[in-house]
Every structure is written in structure tokens, then in C-alpha cells.
Length: 131
Image (cartoon, rainbow, N blue to C red; front, side, top):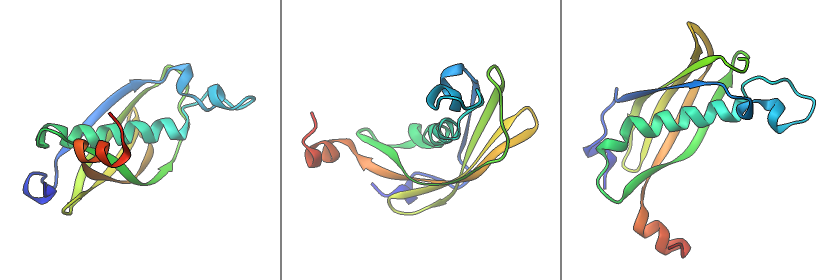
């Protein structure tokens, strides 16, 4: 499958999360603050990116994260509502590039770029011996 045939620049998605204690840096690292962890913000950015293109993929195809270049600009406490957005900014044969952002209210708490690669699940599973 050639992503250029099905994925269009401007496709986008948005996710909303109320920050739970288990998504804070303090949950993972003792003696750290209970604020939204950078890897958890990146996870939401990746998921929003996947959401932006998933319904346009042919059956048997998925996208997987291949690159992240993210800035975490501000802390968010447990209970904060975080909105994450992803927008397609470039499409190559097997790579889709996104601009991603995260907000708490109107305050931007993160931004950057993310890339996802197209993967045929059956071929992937054969390659790695998965069932």
C-alpha cells in the first residue's frame, strides 16, 4: 500500500484525557512530583496520530510510531483535562508525518513532530514469527 494514495495532508484527530495518578512521573519514579509524565503525553500524541489515519487504511494495515521530536512545555496536575491534537503534514510512500500538540485549556503544554510507518500486519507477523 502506498500512503500517498489514501492519506491526505490536513487529516487530523484529537483526544482528551483527564490526567490520572498512574500517568504521572511520580507514579513511575519515587520522590518525583505527581504531574503528567512526558512519555504519557507522547503516548497520547502517538495515539491521536494513529486515530487521524486509521479509518483510511486498507484492511490488514496499521501504522506504528517510528519517530518523535517532542517538547514538554508545562506541567499538568492529576485531574487536569489535557487535549492532544495531531495533523498530517507530509505523506511519503510508507511514512506519514504529523504535527502534534497538547493543551490544558488554552495553555499549550507540548508540541512537536511525529512519524508513523505503514505496516502490513500479516507480513509483520511472518517476519517476527508472531501468531
